[in-house]
Length: 206
Image 1 (spheres, helix red, strand yellow):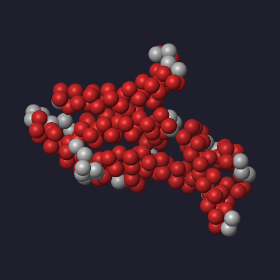
Image 2: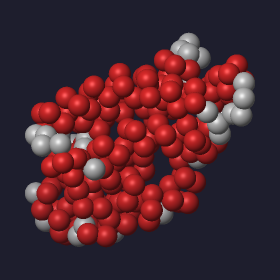
Image 3: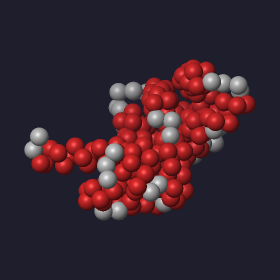
Image 4: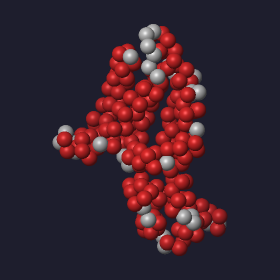
């Protein structure tokens, strides 16, 4: 292995460890020593590759948010699918993501509280969402139905609430519902069919 390949391998090892620790603990509670221990490296080597916790966190946060938003934006800008199909694909892809990476919803919500302007600016979320094919189709759906249109942010808040809250509230919901991990995941998979139906009901009521 060449020196450059070894450097890339070490950097990826550090990033993988940082992703695990940051997703679990968040920025404030994480120490660089925690990341070094997770990676199985000494602290000096971690500091050689990434000179500060802040720099490493910014990389992990940006990659996490790009993955989170990227899945939605790919669906939202598909010219070949209808509004209803986009809702179904978005619901399915996010439920699959959160089942695979259950720490992501709480991690993102905590860090959005800490630095919303920075993240929104880096990812250009507002422009990407409001200029998407999905936003155009949403407006067309509202126009066809007549009456007082629902602002698109009402839709976004309702959709994300239905997707994100169960995973953020997972520990409490498991206790209340007497659910083990397997039952909880089964219920989340059921929501792939339920959430689009609920969203349709919300839009029709509006």
